[in-house]
Image (tube, rainbow, N blue to C red):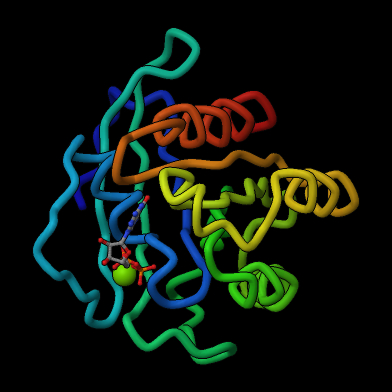
Length: 176
Ligand code: GDP
Ligand code: MG
């Protein structure tokens, strides 16, 4: 990546959560504004970059996507180093993916992320409300207890995806 002196900010964000919760689709939706129906697997670590305006300033967001075979503690330090913001994702139709959120929070904490890491928890696949296993109330209570930002999203119908990323990014921007 080439450093551009015109940037007012350059934030590194990371997205974590169980396999198949929709991390890659959320990132692609935010960066490219599309939902790719073909199967996608992330081999190793994938980096997506987006230039954007936040609070009237121009800068760059680097988004690191995780490997396909997510295993706790297996990620490289390089992947987390210097991250100022994180999206921790579960699937509202898979209660187990919500139960694993504390392990992902630990994973972030015990790696080289920024000491003032900002975290948003995301309950993805809100379009599948009929298959819901995690209530909004459960999500809200967990977020409140752990002082996390929280939102339900759908990478399929687009709802709240931009909102979730902007909420995290503007929070990082305000505290940087
Ligand atoms: P990852 O392993 O966390 O990166 O998950 P992927 O982004 O590869 O998505 C896993 C599966 O969930 C794919 O079949 C996607 O099409 C599907 N998926 C992702 N986001 C959504 C969503 O918001 N709603 C629905 N219905 N399916 C989704
Ligand atoms: Mg993926």
